Length: 382
Ligand SMILES: NC(=O)c1ccc[n+]([C@@H]2O[C@H](COP(=O)([O-])OP(=O)(O)OC[C@H]3O[C@@H](n4cnc5c(N)ncnc54)[C@H](O)[C@@H]3O)[C@@H](O)[C@H]2O)c1
Image 1 (tube, rainbow, N blue to C red):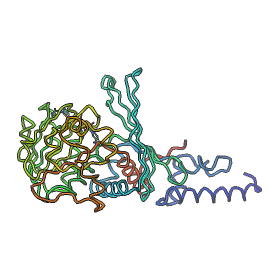
Image 2 (cartoon, rainbow, N blue to C red):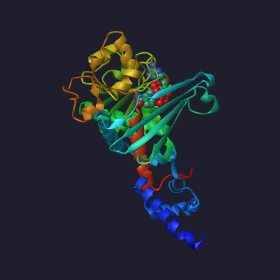
Image 3 (cartoon, helix red, strand yellow):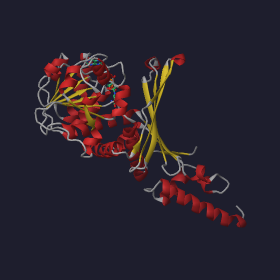
Image 4 (cartoon, rainbow, N blue to C red):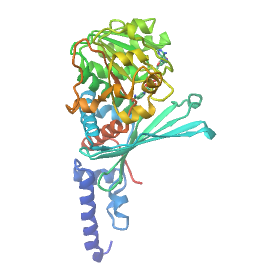
């Protein structure tokens, strides 16, 4: 660099520092400079590079990084604020766009959202390729992009599969906190997959649970869950032989299966039970029988998404068991104090979630801020 370049260099450097400060408010700029050198991108400080590309590398976060960054307690709190924003008009979120791709036997789904208080702008992209197990890959893969809400610049790309598991379970824990009776010693779990595990962890953070009764179509899946989760949460887990045994006597119930038809029956429910119904998220799938929906006070994650995607509700409406007016409200309305929530100890409450983008984007923002603070992840220039 020649001496007459120096004022320009200084000016560009100033621009860069300001832009970096705007996008990375928690970042220590000295640390940034040294991390640039570590990552061999110190050329970023030379003026012959475009300013944006130079000084705002994108952060890449894998599942292991995310694991070490977030815990359920803070995620539950973050999601509570996200749902309040969503249900009080402080979020922008369309219903997810699902693009079927029959030619390649796959599907791609985009889930963008913006949360105005959190300044969180992002999008989850989910692919569904049913032949993937033959290639040793999961059928469903997810990635989340987080953008600067000031410039639209890509700030981070992170694994979305683990975030989907923890944000779903944490949202159920948040709904449980708002709707369930204070004492819920017996937890019934239908399904023994990824979501069952995450739910057992998250629900243990908001309620004292002394017994868990698990049912899965495949007894070995339930046994594996028992071996894995029992020591982790320090609660007795009983593997039961039918859905009825898992439901009877439960104070708290979670349905996290891939069932196509209802798996619970209203007659089995204990008065006062709170149900987190998580599995069905397509108009043709359902886990909950129409009589349970009719008996319960029903809250949802997003009214609009539920009316577009949720077989549990849409099929019960079509069969005449309930009307749309039976949905008492969004969980964000209860959390914002706009709707009452549970009014009696013997009331059956049900939280139905199809999973919405604000949950992913709020989680991604939390993960990103913590990653920057703790200098976790890999900086990549694109
Ligand atoms: N609402 C949301 O936000 C959200 C988010 C993620 C996943 N999900 C849904 O939650 C469900 C569970 O997800 P997962 O990742 O744990 O899946 P998974 O495949 O890991 O586990 C599903 C389990 O359900 C069991 N099962 C299927 N039919 C059953 C039946 N009739 N009775 C008892 N058990 C049965 C399977 O054997 C399996 O062990 C899926 O339907 C998924 O699409 C919802």
